[in-house]
Image (cartoon, rainbow, N blue to C red; front, side, top):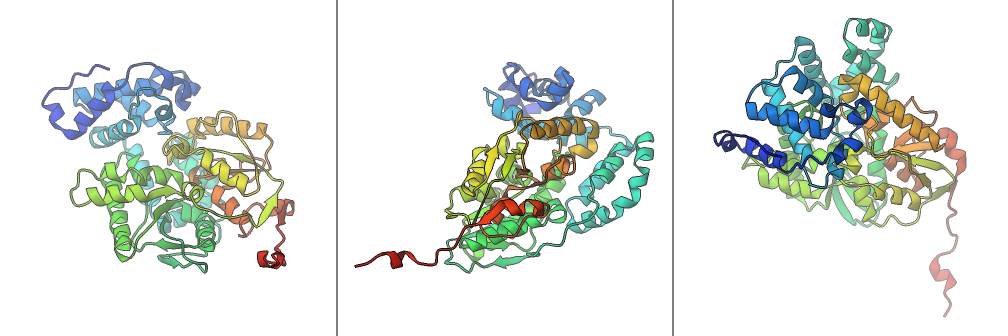
Length: 454
């Protein structure tokens, strides 16, 4: 793609990076077939190729984003399906985030948009505030239709997405180390996240329990928190960088105490961002090297377990599990087969769903800010899941669980919750009716040495 930036503009490192990305696009259009918004709307401006043109014009003109540019950039889910499809390797992920940052800094959003986006940025990364908001949400449910009539569809979506009842608190809560009772084989740091520990704390519990039972010390670092993804995708770069620096500082202290084999992330949306800390903080000489090192250590929980011998499962089942690959896992991190392989080894029958590459519509805060589009994508995903008639659904991202839960006629859980169950953990919340289809593997009464005779 031809660009027309001036030499003065290209002195800005961000513009120079954007130009490099723009020039790698060859207009082939293969991205349009896998873009959820283009598939739904058929509007070229709602395809990656169309958005690239809009971003190019905005940056070349060095002017605030027009309403048209804001509309179509805001409709992007950042699902990154285009990233894994593009034959030219266009770095759309970084380009769309640059555009969001530029729009936030120079755009002319109205009061309502600024209020809602600011509310999300202040609430979601802080578990205490988020938990309080969920407790209050039921009070507003009777007013959902009224909110929509008065144009406050974002607040209405928040009310509808909030769970009716908060789950029990995590068993393993706060900073500290879960020390294995087995011979120690590894030491890892776990990112406990922000929204996930409120909406489904059992995911972190399952992660810690499974790893500790298999010889892994699990450290939750004091001072670590939100990865920054939620604010970054809202265009609030400074806030995202502050969250990233806080985690880098907290994890660096743990690395100074003792070697760390991996930084475990069990929310794939967070994983994509943490693996990109090296790029996010490359401009800060005090953080660049440390951030790059920590990015190299970051792995999804299933990525880590695939390279780690879990041994035989403690239970087996006849359950038919539909695996929903989160976009941030399959497109953002290139992880698709690992979770399915682990589930099969854990004794489950795994089935794929149609259009697995198409987003469910969660995408961080997308199901709040673009609720109509998110609902259409959710309904499409639900139909594809129901078509394979599973006993349950599993995925690797809390956003997908929140988006789909309650709309399916079967339960949905995190992959690590199923694996923890298979290897000796408790029945995941919501799967109690399925427990009768799971059988404990009998423990041998004799050891190997009892069968060996001189």
